[in-house]
Length: 235
Image 1 (cartoon, rainbow, N blue to C red):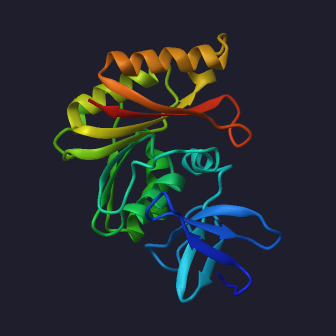
Image 2 (cartoon, rainbow, N blue to C red; image 1 turned 60 degrees about the horizontal axis):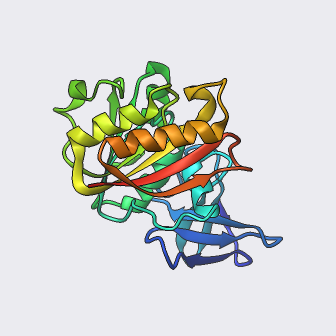
């Protein structure tokens, strides 16, 4: 942990719960206030300024952080909201989502791999009361429907060929009308033979057919090659 008076921290003008940290040398990174003070999740830097502990958010480790730095216009994830996170993995991004929604919000984290789920529980869930682990296949939302209440946002980062369909199926079951979705598309997971731009267009079409209105598509290079973030709203 660093207590560094040389580091500048300011709240985002656009995204409640998100801050920007100007590190030594002028590098700017997003950050969140640590909901579990003193606890690191993935080796991130902890910085204390004005008695508040911030977690520096690595855009090379988190597609959501990359989206913020690549021109995200609106962040659907806000303090007090409920979020369904599909493909939570070991919790790198989910931990920052937990910070943002805060104690009045909640995060349901769905992950299929037992070993990775154990890491998520030990790194994130054991230290945060606003996160619930769900060991399940995101392609089968009916199997965990009893565990998830209606949510305001669905965030998905699942390496499956049918990424768009997975999101639509979960939105129909859990997402409030007018709610938001964020889909991290891994083009090579969908179709290794097609150009990423073609894959993105296909996923956009799938979401539209499922009743989602596309708000923004962000290409995540240089933080993630052949990845895009699709932000949409459930009509």
